[in-house]
Length: 340
Image 1 (cartoon, rainbow, N blue to C red):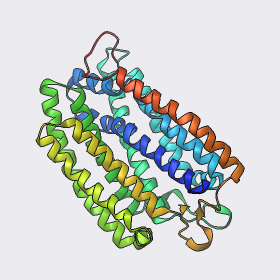
Image 2 (spheres, rainbow, N blue to C red; image 1 turned 120 degrees about the vertical axis):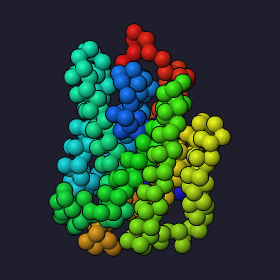
Image 3 (spheres, rainbow, N blue to C red; image 1 turned 30 degrees about the horizontal axis):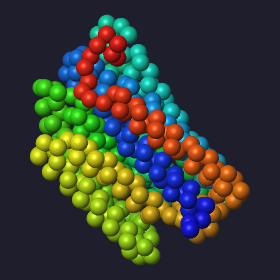
Image 4 (cartoon, one colour; image 1 turned 90 degrees about the vertical axis):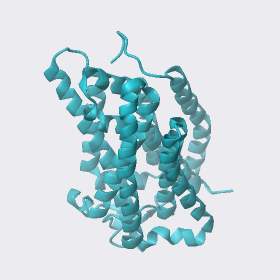
């Protein structure tokens, strides 16, 4: 049996994966929003995610709550180190939500253009910030004694985190374009089909560059692969999932392409977790003494036990809610008087 600390590390990975897959296509749709032509196409884009975007963010809220309760020291260090980045992310998520709700409330072209720009910018910034955070976690951040952050905001904007941020943006754009293909029809669907090929090509370039950069600049990223050789199976599955995306689109199977895109995101997050384990936050000052791990940053065993029982009760509700929402709003998007 796995211990409670490892259990919560895995559960955090599951929650992060759920968020990245579900809100990933939301952010991708938003990042593609300005490429749509005319009011009709942009309203289609908004209505494709309108009924589900807020439910998707439940996974992020749950992730944050679980991190706070299970690993409070890591939560505190992350918020002190990424404070300004988190504020920017919060503003991006707020503007994104407001843009969805306000955009079609007035017929004014200036009004709608403003909110179109806000929706696009907020979505792209949020996607990049998530990637930058992952890149910094891989590279390590200047955490000193007591989990105190000893750097500045600009210390987080190094080449490797920015590269991971760019890869995350184009990955979500690819994921979002596949989702849009599933939700549209006619000429717009055919236009989006070309976008899938374009976003996949750009993603593949960034995927290869990021992999090479990771192996060269962060040799410790594969240290756990030596202890657990079976993890290489995830690498193979990741490559197969990426390769199946263009194959599925070429054969006219967008549903399979979306599943492959989701599996790509999931595999990358699990590989990120394996590279990081047992650390939650790696100190770039003194990794051996100042890093926060699943053991030295955790709550008491009693707290972890109580939370585990609550998680077993709560997770089925989250899964059921998500399933029902997607079932109710399945099918192609059509504009009505109740649309965004």
